[in-house]
Length: 324
Image (cartoon, rainbow, N blue to C red; front, side):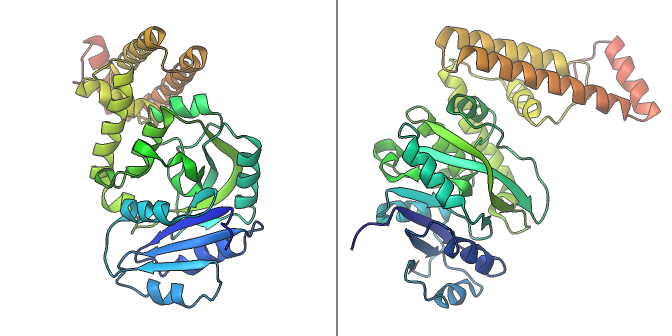
């Protein structure tokens, strides 16, 4: 039997409510040359029965009645996959009908790109959209602050998963994808297609909601790893400022903007020496981020109550250092 062009890897755990819609969005893709590897991860609901109800021969179900976690299931899929490309999908999201067609064509036409994501929208709620850049250099810069790539939009060359890059690290769940992109970015090139090719579901049962503190911890581990490339060991205050600046979640404090500027100047100076990121793009990215924080800071101060505004201006007069 000849190998398919694409191997879809989909771990499924307690997802019966949304799983039929997800599977339908994949089985009705305009690009049809794929194998569909579903890893049932010991669900307590009827996910298994739903998967077993499908007769499409492209579906291959793997189940062992154990809950091993998403990273281990993806790694299992990487070992089994036969396709030239590996496409990821989560069990509650919805793929656009032409997702595989567009990503396959892009990767075929750009042999230097190892991994291709896409833009996406939210369904079931709203959240901060962390994907905003298309080319590799900007994605690499964006990775210094956050994930930069939406995991269930990813299609990658199977041969990219080799050596130290073969497996996702289960210890980093639920930030296993971010840690993998950071590892890969040192050796491989990425891209995000500007088309919206996925509806990313927000729901209360998501792994990232249940394990938010753990996710945040390992996100900072990944950020500190990247900062080490610049020979920077951040203080707790610098790491806090780094995180607030990206979203931006402004702190109405006299020292907020000065601390961001000082931190960004430190990043620019280090990059000028070690040249980890494309120089002009890195400087422009940080300058744009600083201007956005200025804008948000002014808006937030204007929204303060009279009492809070008086407290803020008094602390400014005293040059009160609130961020420690």
